[in-house]
Length: 268
Ligand SMILES: Nc1ncnc2c1ncn2[C@@H]1O[C@H](COP(=O)(O)OP(=O)(O)O)[C@@H](O)[C@H]1O
Ligand SMILES: [Mg+2]
Image 1: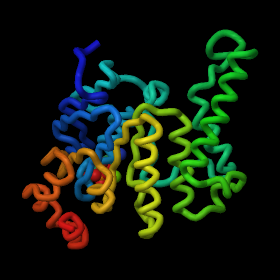
Image 2: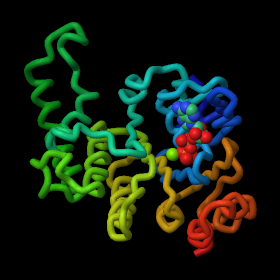
Image 3: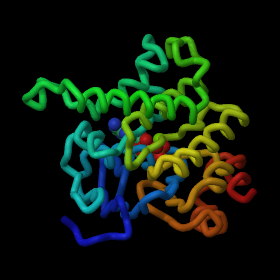
Image 4: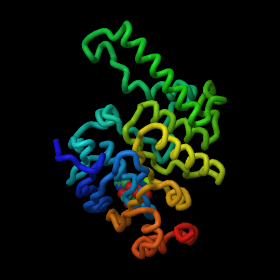
């Protein structure tokens, strides 16, 4: 065990490369329990790679990830999910031909003690209680994300914006302690974007879950984040509350190379 830290998740000196390309060059940061911690930066900055290191889709060459005092750097991805770190992806990753409700139910499976795997049958009262609790959680999630009307529809019949909501719902069904969201508003119109921002705030307030958010929409980032970490070419170039970040000269410079739209939104 590490000494007590003010951070629920500590990211220490993470290095990751692909061939000659350095995707992350010694990124260190920390995420506090219950906050919305946003990661921003131009395309290719290393944001998704950092999430992939946190949940062990990628193995960093150097550095450590500490979750609630435990070094999880070398754990397999499914173990990390079981510890309570859930995520959504930059592209929707759902079972397209299953219904919304069945996709959400699958999220809850990380908690189901399988009879075979745990070396005993898992029946009786404990199982009934777990199932009832899961139904309660599923209803709460459906209510929060306002997807009651589509619960019986197959996911592939839904527009992209709704599929994105279902993906968040499935991640929540894992009852995570930390939720990683990779560009949840990408490809959405203004109204859908505002809905997602509201859902993320609701999740933070009602679910006692820490949120790590990668998001391009600076309006959303500045409105809902407690703290913001800025990556550029695999390096952390700034970290602070939204007001600090908005006026940080390194951040403004990093965004100058991108579309003007992003820059002017940073300054909005
Ligand atoms: N699996 C991979 N193989 C090779 N290069 C990768 C891989 N994943 C990411 N990269 C590269 O690493 C850099 C950072 O990527 P990424 O973290 O996806 O950026 P972003 O900040 O846009 O999310 C980019 O140059 C990207 O091309
Ligand atoms: Mg990305």
